[in-house]
Image 1 (tube, rainbow, N blue to C red):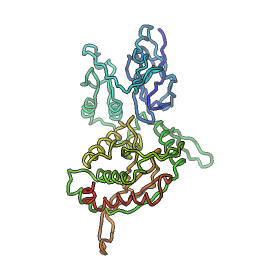
Image 2 (tube, helix red, strand yellow):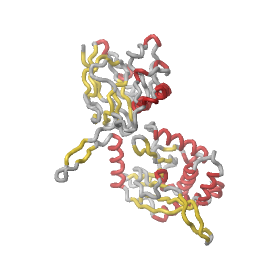
Image 3 (cartoon, helix red, strand yellow):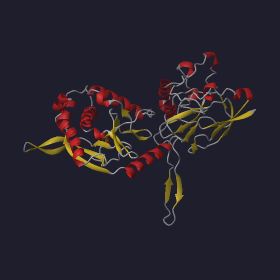
Image 4 (cartoon, one colour):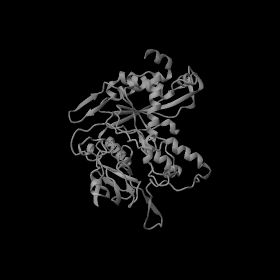
Length: 425
């Protein structure tokens, strides 16, 4: 027997570390090449990492909740010498599959994804003894949160892969025995550690920052440290836009209309669709508008982008907004082109205003609060209107208050008279 140590692979996108969320194998288990062995969290996503070696798990080098640097030992597998050579030739040649990335010491990196290899039906062991084959981390999470034993799930995917519908069927069958609402949190959540505090007999809880929270912390700290930001806001009468949406319930949503007006404003004020090159002391304006959307996902706040938003109709924006926000909430956002400007709909949390932090290296962020009935004066008469507060945070290096106000009014005027605005677009 010869021991083969599997190092944490380069997970791509410049990431240098990952947090071990959950081990999928125990020491002493037998594993096959390409079998997922651990679930790790990076600043970008939740990923199941497969092993390039077959054999018996000898040592797990990190505990759940620990952070491991890329290139450090993750797992040691004891395997017969010939079996060790199952380390794939494509990894040794540096093919650079971004999801895994181990063995990529040389050669060009590609974004090609390997399809799961089909397994003949005869090679699948009886359900009571086979190792469950699950490709998607979302399927594993669904099973874990629903208390489903994957080894008892009958797979219907190609090559014996367990797919989402398989787990959902298992959940339906076990619904009467579902865990009560007071069940303990999933194992992936690091357990808080109580530490006594001198003097008052109370305690404190310490929760380690995950890889995702570390990345958020670094980005927001850099934004506040580097960008001299200013905030302006205005109350907007959204009654006409509200009525337009109510009159066409199957049409685009309110956010799609607002996105269309924002895009039009950015074309009028291109210095807000930009970044600052501090080394060359230049403002770099982008030709393309990639509209970032602040979305609260399972792992926290993420900002996926609608790419090429500047060329889309309201209907196209609506469809793309729904797609990217659904992907973000499900944790499927990674590796895409970054946004050039961010739109934040914090009204979904039933709050009225916010002085947001700019999403570095962007130079501005526009936010909307909830739309609510408020007394409003129209043509000298007091009436009830649908009012929302719009706040705009901008980098004072790229423009002054006059430009910021001009952009805000272009968007606000379009919201207050959407029919005329759409006719001009």
